[in-house]
Amino acid sequence: MAQVRVVIVEDEAISRRELKRMVDAIEWLVCVSEAAHVTAAIDAINHHQPDVIFLDIKIPGGTGFDVLNQADFVPNIIFTTAFSDFAVDAFDHNAVDFLLKPFSKKRFDIAIGKLRSKLFDRLGQRHVDSTKVFVSSGSSMLPLTLTEVEHFSVNGDYVVTRSQDGERLLNTSLSALELELDPRQFVRIHRAHIVNIRYVHRMKKQGDRQLLVQMRSGASLLSSRAGTKKLQRFFWKLD
Image (cartoon, rainbow, N blue to C red):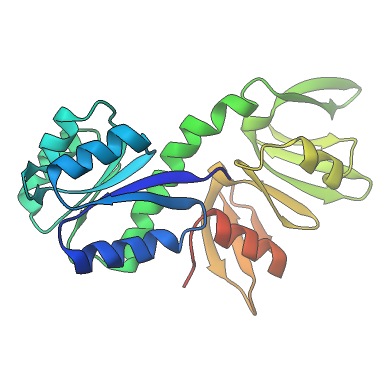
């Protein structure tokens, strides 16, 4: 997954340091700048043009809304504030999420999940929208758009694709298919399974360093230990 550039705007040093620690724990996030007041925030955003900003609302020199109104470039926003009465205004700015201080790691992870989904739709969709494979359907070969595939699984000498249209057979190996898929959307969680992360419904710990990955269709797929590590890197650190 491509790295996502972050600017943190927070005037309290302790809060800024803790937020950066949580950001740094997400492999696909990279903090490119920090700012403690309005002018520095505007300069950081204009210079780095980040993918997302964690934006406090009450900061020296004005408010987070002043930053958004004066910056030349407005990225995705996750507001962080101790004042809940700003929530409506925050979502008027199409915020990804609104974190009310003090927030827990669990609540932070929820915000990161929303961010990942939004950024994926923006950054990853173009790569695969027009990509199709041909799959067996009786005696015919039909095109299948990869974005519609929930997961691929091995079945003997074939790969089974699961989509809204049901299951189809693909005459290839899972390893060969993996090379053709966008790694920002598809994750090989097991030697027998590749999942489309857009269709992952939930994940549950299963045994020693494994996850039971539940898909929107209701299918449950067990990850290997290596697959669990991939999922942890792709989504966020799992407790």
